[in-house]
Length: 411
Image 1: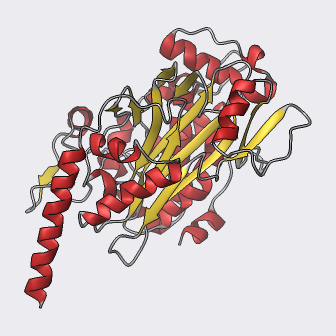
Image 2: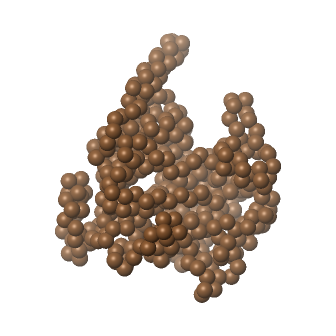
Image 3: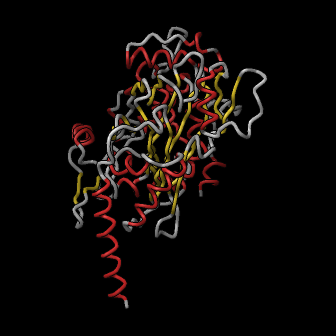
């Protein structure tokens, strides 16, 4: 189904893409070279002749991944990662807006200042079409959207009706009339909103997108160091769930209709359409657990939106050890603290992701499961104790006893 959607989609810009499956950084820092050598990242790479080191993002020591269907007969979880090339002025604007930092991309260099690592995890429902589409397309759209396409995109959004009849544009507001030479450049929040809404517009050409959807969690990482360093060794990184100082620091919220922020947004525009099912779970319009999704177009006029909630954070001084991204099959079973503690002593990011999934499966998790682990400069230097170790052992024991009772009953 995802392939059929792709065949019918269109591109907002020419088809040339500059994103890649490796990251580049300067070889001028012996400190960074020693980090990479210790991590066995350079063993298969020739010495750089141009002063630029290239590392494949797919290496299990650069980004760790683990995924499983669980007990389901289908897989609706997908993920993707890539190195994008974005206008450094947009990064500069975003840093000034979020942190009042005057970052000089000239100090980093033309090539390195444009490089942004993109990692996304897509949790589908109603079928794999939308989540599969996001895996193949979202990073390309994120890189290629332009201000000139926003007026037409905004007109399409308004045509959705209902909730969107009163939509004022949010982060797209400066560009909803025809952009001119004096119009501001996009910042990362506006670029993200444009890309996400464009996904919905492209999906709208296929009837399956009316009843099929996906949530998307995306991380953008840019090393601000000069000379340029990779995100896993940078002293200062801009991040758009990280592990800090021995504890979990969540960077996202679950966008359920009964969450405070979503409840205010929806009730202000739509009144109350929240229904609690027989299991005690709240669903918007009696159907959707999440109210910020891509696809599910039949629910858009009732307040379900593709507009992303964007948060930025500056990761400094080696205090941050890693970022963990998980699908709902993991987060519905484990707390944030359990997730980061499971990854803390892993020898590499791949092993960390696998340890998270393995524990969920021990506890009887049945849903599709996906975990991504992105190491940061504090990898291997985690302080503090494993605070959830005893809790995990208790939960493991309880799950084992329950499974034993089930086997005895079946016998």
